Length: 154
Image (tube, rainbow, N blue to C red; front, top):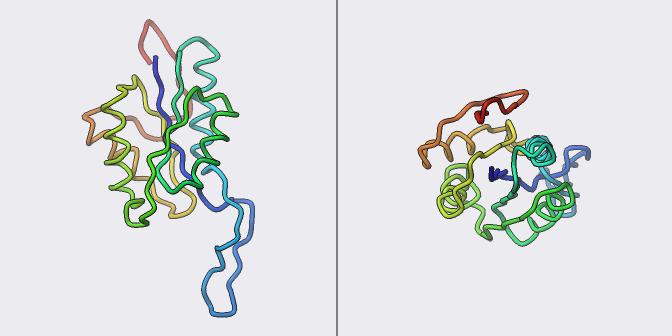
């Protein structure tokens, strides 16, 4: 089984964002990390690989070159492959565009399962996973707390 896990680079959830003297958020030099909920999804995929349920885990991220840091983290966690769909245009990182870009990659690699984090901590949305399923014609389940394989079915 091949599992694909979308992972997003976000401002680290453990730091405090400060308001600058101009009244705007000062995000220029903030630490970034993998979205914590994507980290949970990736860990589930890696555990399924360790149990022999899956044979390949692919982490995919949409963003600028700095998103490579997130993919390196995914590889260190146990992903077999990290794929960056590079874009330097912020409007391309909106949920529907991200879903379209990831869906195009999904159609190339044909994973058996896509595991997404429940939401992104930066914009607090929960859209990309459902959009990928709709675009690709995949069945979907949202907010699962566990997964098990029985008689060849998840």
